[in-house]
Image (cartoon, rainbow, N blue to C red; front, side, top):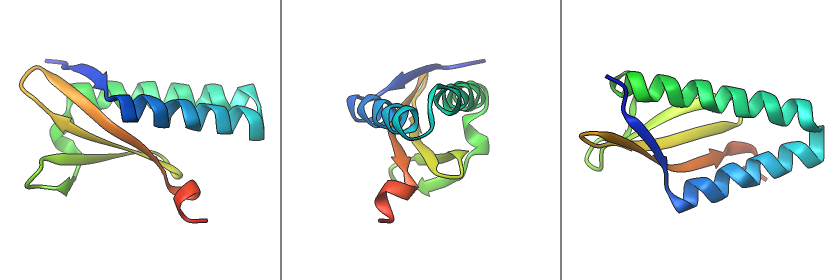
Length: 94
């Protein structure tokens, strides 16, 4: 059974920052492709959260690679999944 996906305020901010970056650097097509990949990843997370590896098993934080430069970290609850951040790997590596 699919679980409801909720973005934390941090994840919402991170997601918007990625969209702004992609739009300004590469244009609408690349930004739209990221949106589609994020929605597809969210659907997979919603259906099968247990297939994603733990980043931190004690805190039950799991990791989903959305693109080669973006990772979503999430926590599964009984009826929902909370995406806690959308990590932009290239922004952190500079």
